Length: 325
Ligand SMILES: Nc1ncnc2c1ncn2[C@@H]1O[C@H](COP(=O)(O)OP(=O)(O)O)[C@@H](O)[C@H]1O
Ligand SMILES: [Mg+2]
Image (tube, rainbow, N blue to C red; front, top):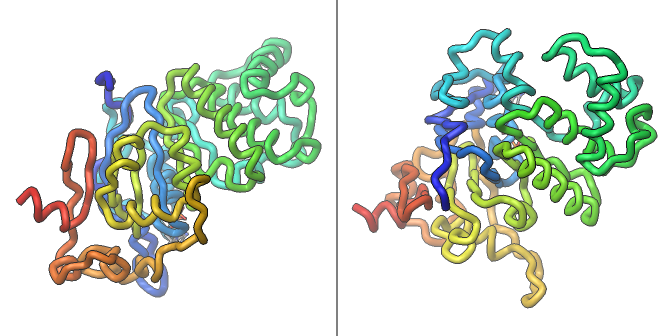
């Protein structure tokens, strides 16, 4: 792999939600680096903190959530040192977002063209309608939509088309990083693949880095180069897709991969017995210890650190930290 410039660095990020029942440690010490133009997947079960992390990257954590610690560097700038106005400026133009359930976030009473035009004029100031229309129609073609969508309302579009509109909005200002939070989970399986492919195509054409968030490890692995497996607010394993599928290091990753359906081997979906721990009172040891088939005494006592076992392959598991000791 050619060495590219780091575009996004996350260091020991912690985001908690303060509720009546206590603090929910939604993101609890996450670190990773992304390079220019890279496609990076974050995969994990529902509730493991994926959307919260996306919000933190965009400077959009709101009450009862707070950033409890860590740093996020976007192109070298620590975003926590920026004021709200500056963060608003870089959002969309440097780092853009396709939120979870994005297609429902379109304004039902505004034509698609006007909604995209709003993103442009908010950041780049007034532009004549004719110029905007040309630019937006070209953009619509880029994401595989006909020009007439410019004049249409969200309710006139299918789910897949609405999702393409959201992709168009995310790329209109040519950001360096695009975050897509479960961009296809509301679509049927056939449309999912096509929309996902569109997203990756435009990302590559733009040279932007893409963070693709999802719960379907197999679907995601088809389009990203590198994946991070999240579990209970932490990263369990990060690696290049090819390496990780050949040699998964974390027992959780192993079980996730084994539970993926394959054409050769038809078996009933096994799932992983047990439930993730509550993020309100996380265990003091490894969060996966209560479900792990390889659990050792030590695992319930001490939290494993994320360590690089092979170049670009990181795991947080005592089975491996023992080995390198
Ligand atoms: N506004 C909120 N208030 C309290 N807890 C929240 C809030 N939003 C999310 N959480 C909790 O934070 C954890 C992570 O949620 P989320 O980031 O949405 O996970 P994911 O996107 O992986 O499904 C979950 O336990 C969820 O219940
Ligand atoms: Mg989510």
